[in-house]
Length: 124
Image 1: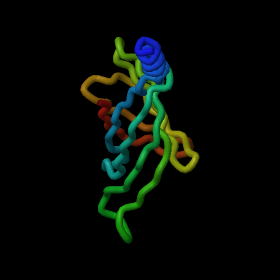
Image 2: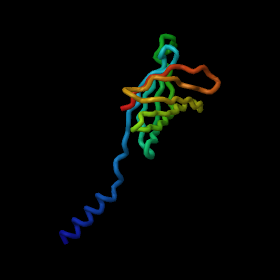
Image 3: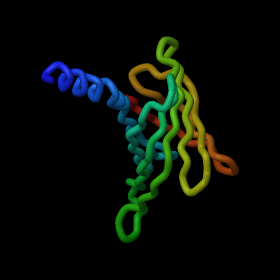
């Protein structure tokens, strides 16, 4: 009886899904770095990460406190080569960036029908 109980417990432990890997993303974008972005992304497939994003205006030109938006952060990471491609979706608008990831990412955020702006990110 004791052996049967141990077998059932072992099978239950093996049947549990593995904990999903997560990464924290933080950075700023805008001409003056006036937008702060944070996200916790979860690995979907090898190299693919997705999660909710929080975007907050941290510039001086705020009325009634900082403006906040929510969106989605999508990353594609090529670990051995240090490449990063990403999309930030805010209010249905998909803005993209790509380049090398080395001690963070400094590059350009491209949004349709808008001027390109600098973006700085760290991915932990």
